[in-house]
Length: 348
Image (tube, rainbow, N blue to C red; front, side):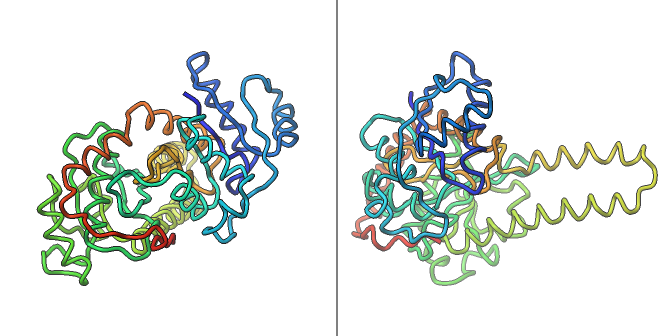
């Protein structure tokens, strides 16, 4: 297996990305998969040498262009074909790599994947489906930003894809699926939610109904479904609140705790909680619906996040997630007869 890494994608590129690669190689040793680094060869080699690592442990493909985090995404694959982001996807399309990993521009990664690789047959919209860790095992949030506007049929596809994903990712057979809504009652919500509810009930094997946002961290559902606009807000709000509260509580402990013994007990507790809730522990998430393994890392991924993203990419390929999604969709093709153009996709 070969895994292509966009070395110049993300806030901490290229150093953290390269450190993450070698952390992965150290972890797996001789059983590690081949990693292809894409980006400016001179900068990559200089960084590897500064880390006192062996350049021969990786493959390098030189690229001349870099995709910025704030660039317009829709035409990147045409305007910057020699960028590390686009080239990593091209390798997957050409069969020269089995997975691409990037912490770069989300919209550019999505649109480039759509136009270069395409969608799994039957898929109308791709989706972002990050794993949200909790004290109860965590859940998949889908869609978390690939589509600002969705139709009921899309939400059903999101549910089917995310169910297949968490079965592969966490070995959870028959995962519980819930629809994110403003109340538990079947008739609650806007037109999208009220129309999606009966379709989910019919086509999703273990649909448990609506779930309010205050309960999503309680382990009631393995998969939480919503439109991408709502999901992106939920994702970023959840990350922000967790980060803020952890820092806030730790600061207050320092202020009120004069007893070092108490501090020595409490600090490890908060370290455990922080590690449990840290998105970097679980690495990247695949772009669900793309007909190839393209993994999106958090934009601020550190060495640890990149290492775990490569591990996640390896597992996604080994578990044949694409085949699993295609098989699940083929059983529900009767409700997906509308023709929706790629251009409708609007990354948040």
